[in-house]
Amino acid sequence: MSYEDGTVYVLRDGGTDGDGWVSPRPADEVITDAIVEATDLQVDDLDDLETYVDTEVLRAVVVDGQEETVTFAVEGHDVTIDRDGAVEVGG
Image (cartoon, rainbow, N blue to C red; front, top):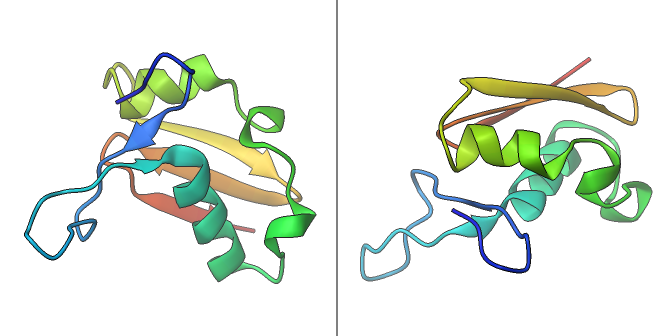
């Protein structure tokens, strides 16, 4: 899901509000949260998501479903996001 401003949104399991509706979250927030949770990095240590991955490539995975996953490097860590919005952070 994306909007005219170019923001890519992710729908994820567990992203429901109190009424059971699934709430989309901006992909940059989802990915940043996963990186901060899995590493010793802080939000201030990270540049904008576009520094690490092309927005069109990300959109092809999480919006269009054209690709299964995309993997990119963020400050020495491999980050993979799949078409369901699941993020893995390694190395």
